[in-house]
Structures are given as C-alpha cells and as structure tokens.
Length: 123
Image (cartoon, rainbow, N blue to C red; front, side):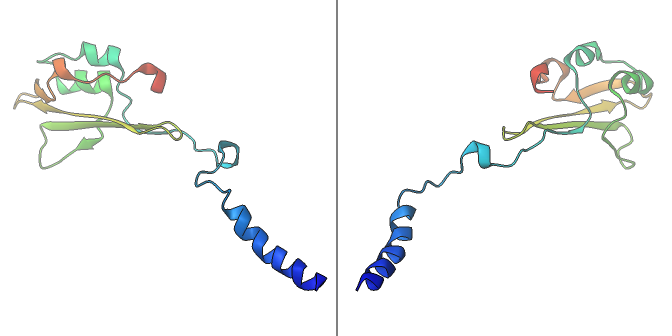
C-alpha cells in the first residue's frame, strides 16, 4: 500500500509542478546574443557633408565603397547598413545615390534632407 501511494505521488508531482511553470525563460539562463553590424556604417557627420554635384570619387572617399554597385545601373549606388544589438529590434538604414552622365551626384532616395538619423549610441 505504501509502495502504491509513493508511485501515485511520484506520478502526480510532475503534473503539479508543471502548473507552476512559466512560458518565458529567466534571463540568466538565456544565451548571449552578440551585436551584428553589416554593410556601410553611415555616420551622421559624413552624411551631412554629402552635397549634390559631388563626383563619384568624392562620394566614395566620404562614404566608402557602396554596398551595391550594379553593372546594369552604373549611375546608381546603394548604401545599406544593418545593426542588431543583442535582443533588441534591428535597425536598418539604406539609401540610393544617383549620378548623371558626367558622374556628378544628381539625387538620392530618400532625399538628402530627409535621411533618417541613427543614434551613435546604437553603433
């Protein structure tokens, strides 16, 4: 009889303890997630120096090599930056530069005045 009671208790104990469980794992048990930086780091001070009419060489010196330099669209450069800090939501910043036939900066998408800023604390 004692043996049967012990067997019933050992079968019921996991069911009772599972009712106390939570769906989230404590933070000290979760694995570390490192920061991910990809693409061109687009610094606000360098973006502020970007002006219409600059040559391709000046833009490349200022911002670096574009992430996408399409051979079918030789006058379009795409700069893309992706940052994910640990478990935080990712931040993506991208824009395209368009040059005229003479290799001078003609326009950008989004326009230079409307480029979003990325806080330096997240870099």
